[in-house]
Length: 366
Figure 1 (spheres, rainbow, N blue to C red):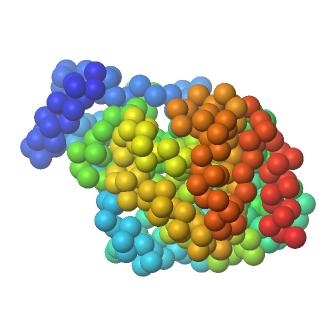
Figure 2: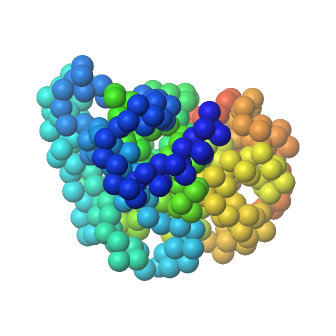
Figure 3: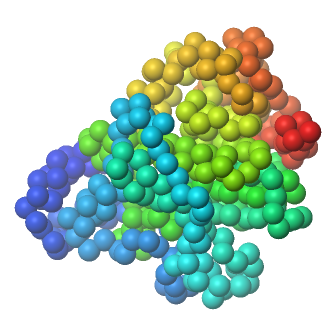
């Protein structure tokens, strides 16, 4: 299947320049192979405006949608200091008005928000869910949750589902301390690129490799925009990431330092020598995994103001994470570098228990 997709990438690139506007039988077959992932809301069951992109009607539209949403390459990070963000966020009225039609499903109003930002003369939006502090209208602390791999994981996080919430209901727990933002990655939730009731699968990652505009690089820049905005508007900013979201969160701290970062099952110095995992990260983050090796990361952390908590569960199925639980390779290598702490007393590939998170937050806010 992957060989077929790569072959079709070349063919479809040629087709896009010829101005083809309708799906042929071959194009329809191709669409059936790449639009296979589930959307977060079935608008046949719950009518409404749930998506920012209409269903794709042609190959040309499909490619143009991707190309206009993913414009950045690895080298653009060299200019990241020039990224600017708006002073205020906007509510995503398109989707929020649809949620309001189903109050039993969405008791929290105005869940989705948009952050305008500008980078390299390109104006764009970063997306997220916002669940405000449950105890006060104007709070001092903000949390940004970054999901790991999987379909519609931000939606799962805010609803208390899935592997992110195995040991702690993350949004509900952190709302005790501040406003909780959950980052929405490209092609997820309301950002889905869709056709025939399904959204794009991993094809999008493969296509962006051929265009030298990695999926992870583009959403990392959006994360940096979010952290920059939150730092302007809150006294303390917490960045919490799990799995691939944990690795992306670590990368984000190397460019824009939050007050604290929770990296759960997301980083190991073993990345430097574990080629299978390194290759996967390259598909998303290009050469960052090579350039930011263990020595570079240690040096950056040593000189960072960010407080880090790295957590590793027992029986984590990720190749490099379970050895971290058993042998503490990263902790031993860092050897007290920076403001790092480590926690291991839990099971599986998930965030740590609420009590561990609470202790970490209270230490930073004391």
